[in-house]
Each structure stands twice: as structure tokens, then as C-alpha cells.
Length: 619
Image 1 (cartoon, rainbow, N blue to C red):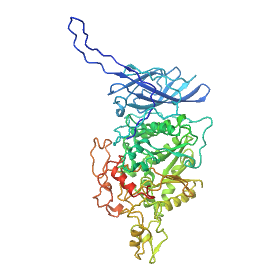
Image 2 (image 1 turned 120 degrees about the horizontal axis):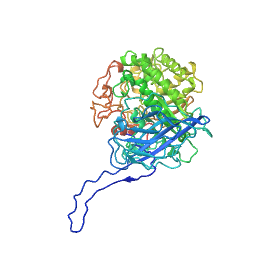
Image 3 (image 1 turned 120 degrees about the vertical axis):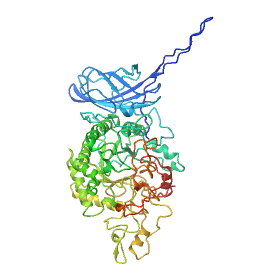
Image 4 (image 1 turned 90 degrees about the vertical axis):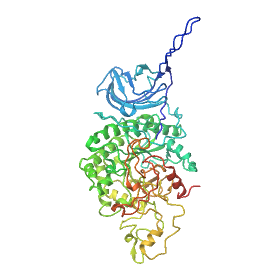
């Protein structure tokens, strides 16, 4: 449900029509059907770099636009200049590594049809010797394109993109799937900047302006009252190869980065754009509502690296994005699962195969090499890892060991994030973990359940201290996702209860109105939380909205694969409002809203509830 805003150079349609020939006194020849209007536009944006005199490499990103009749399949042909060769391609079917001269690249299975006016994006890495130049002529399906010979750097970025998102974005994710044969040579991530480079700062949120996702903004602005939050910065979830590459109707990574550059314009204030890197094999231990596209058993580790992380790094490293601040939330839920859920066979396989640890280390190595990229790892939330010593300490140790094992060590991580896409209260104002009721600690209550924390901020700051004790620098910064933790509205307690029963006191005093702190799917009664802000308290880099409010956590009933579920996402009973729960949530009802679409699809009823229960309230 992201819209492509790639830049197009110009349009020319080559058309041939055979019609009726009428000659005086002679019968007209029959009208023959017209040939389809055909044509193509190519934007070829290359970023070369020099490794030694006369030798280097380059990344080329190609936008192929179809101004004519729809293509069911396509093949783009061009000739690499002398001294250049292809080393790695992605998001299309490329010739073998080492190809020189004539190149023929064809669609992959997921981007074969290109509608009239549509476009597709793909790219490759290559080597050059002598002097780098770009190809100057392109054809698609045998028809000459007039967009060849594009710039060797990005198109100008001082103005907005030449195409705009529609006012009503699509409501279902694209049906894209990755190519079946991964490339064999990982692309290089060149330096994005060589002169007058912005420094890699301690807290990227300070002095920056948040990116406004034009697709989410258009969606919420179309909802009653939605214009009150449509200008708030939210993260972009790259939860598949399809969402990374984009399509004619869905913004991909490069389209979002281009839009961020346009939002920055000529300002010297950097725009900060957030992405969720979220496509590990056996993701979420193969959870149903958030199941991914790669599996360990089907070469998922290699596909994750070559089809997903490598192209992301190649795109983010383009020089035209060097003045942006790019924040990556890297694989939320993954490492916490290795602490608490190894009893699940898929989690055990992800652990024994090294898929999670190795995949995250690979991602950190590739992304940290880009100077204006900032990486944050996930620490779950207080109701997941808040118990010591079983969960809290082991989770911090695992995160430290994973980071220590990267090429740059602790420097490869800029911080950690809590409560991603969850509902835990930022601060419980009416009691703390030290509160006692009639001689009983609140830890003894059913709600707190002997946890060491009652809210996200106290948990986050304590986890930060533990990470520093495990070796991270004391400049370590934390993020908290406050997008849906407001818990305002009429159900919000005005103050602490006067009850002398510990359970009654906690239940009447807590602002988090979930039935159980482990409930996570489309929670009834939730509200928008504190708006994004930098350095709200010492040790916290920012409060952020990583989960775009209104995007569903999962469907409330099984939705078969089809128009409403093109990616074939599963059904988790924790999203079913009729579900009575399990031992993981104390056999409590799920507390989920009814009539929810599959995860990631906009859910208007939930968005209206979030606005109504916002805290601080919306004006």
C-alpha cells in the first residue's frame, strides 16, 4: 500500500495504426485492428566510486516506466560501456555475474505486469575501469526508450518528485514475491558522501525534522478528524521484498527516500526518516499474523541477505540521500524470541541455524557502513522481558553479544527501542513498582504478576543501564514507540484507587486498560500516545511513532489468500475478539477489536478509536 514517486524524464509513445483506406469510387479496405501503443521511459541513476586510480565500482538504480499499453512481461536491453561489468542484480532476472557488453534483464515473477502509466524499480552493482560512463540507449521488448543515458548521480532533489501519490491510497499490500534465484555476490555499500559530509551524530533526532509518509498522511487525512495527526512522522515498514522494491501503486524504499529529499528541499535542517527492517527467515518464530516470506529450510538466510538486505544497503548508500538521517529499527521481536520462546520448534531452528543472530549481524554490518544511517535494535517491552533474572538479564547479554560480534562492534548500534507496535503505558502515573497496598507489593497483583516494572519508561531506562554494564558506551540512546499507548478517554482513571485490596487497587489505578499485559492485537480502548519528540528525558533519544496508527495488527477472522489478503498472511486467535486466551496471557480474552483486516492494512475503526482515546488529547 505504498505509492511509487519515482522521477520520470519524458514520455514518447511510438504507435502504428492501420485504418480504413478510402479511395473515390473504390470500396474501402476493411479496418484492421490497431497495434497497441508501445513505449518506455528509463531513468538510470548510477553512483560510481573510485577504489584506486582508474578502477572502481558503481550501483545503478533503474526506474522503468510504461507510458503505453500494459506489459504482461518485459525485457530491458542496454549495452554496458567498455570496461564495465555486472556483479550483482536484484528485483529482476539478471544475466550471470561478470557479464560485459550487451545486457538483457527481464522481469521477476513479482513485477511482470506493468500497467499503463505504471513503473517498476530494480538495480545492480558493477565494476568499471578506465573512466566510468553510463549506458546511452535502452529498449524494452524491442522498442526504443527515450529515457536512456540518465544521470550518473541522482536526478535533482531541490524540488518535489514529478509524480504524486493519489489522495486515496490502495488498502491492500502488493502481491509481490522475491525472485526464486538469489544473486551470489553481495553488493558493496559505497560511501555515500566524500566531501562536506554531515557528521554521524550521537542522537539523530536532535535538530532534525521527521519525515511524513505521504501515503499514511493521505489515508488518515481522509478520515474524519484525521487531519489533526496527518502531519506526524511515522515509520515505514519494509516487511517484504515487495515493500522494499515498491511498484506502480506502492511506494518502495527508494520512493520514500526521494520523498524525504523533496520534503527537505533546500533547507539545512536534515529530514529524519525511519524504516523497520523486518524480513528475517522464520520471522517472529513463524507467528501467524506476522508470518514472513522466507524460511530457514528454503535457503531463507541467503535470500534474506541477497534479496533484501543487500538492495536496501545499496539504495540507502546513494549520494543523493547523504544529507538525510536514516533510522533503521532492525528486526523487532527477533532476539527477544530467542530468550523466551526456544520451546517453539521454529524458534529453536532459528536459533540453531544462526538465522536471527547471523542475519541481524549481517544487516548491522551492511547498514552501519553508511555514515548517515542509525541502527536501533528491539528490546521487546516490559511485559515480555521485565522479569529478572530469567528474561531481563539474559536478553541484555544476548543483545550485547550479538552486537559485539559485528565488524564495528558496539559502534554498529546507535541505540535500542522498546514497545515497538505495542500498547504498554509509557508511564503509569498512579503507582510504581515500589507501591505497597495494605502491606502487599503491587508485584503480587495479578496484573503485574511479579514483573519488576509497571510501565515502559522505567523498563527502558533500567535496560539501558544493564546494556551499559554489559559493555555499551554510556552515550547509548533509547527509543520508545508511543504511537498507541495513550490510554485516554473516559476509561482513564483520574487518580490512584483508595482500595486496600492489591488487585482492586492496581486494576482501578492503571491507565493501561488491556485485559492482560500480554495482549497485543488491535486492542480495544487504546489511544494515540505522546507525539514524537526528541530527548524527552535523559537517556531517551526520542519518543517515536514506529507503528503507523490505524494499521492493523492482524485479521480478527481468517481471511483466505485473495484480494483482501494477497500475501497469504495467517490468522492468529489473539486477534479474534471471541478468543478466550491461552496460558501465555493467563487464559484471558484477547481484547481485540472485531472486523479487522490483515496486518499492515489500514483499519478505519481502530484509527477512530485511537483518536478518541488519545492522551494527551487531540485538539
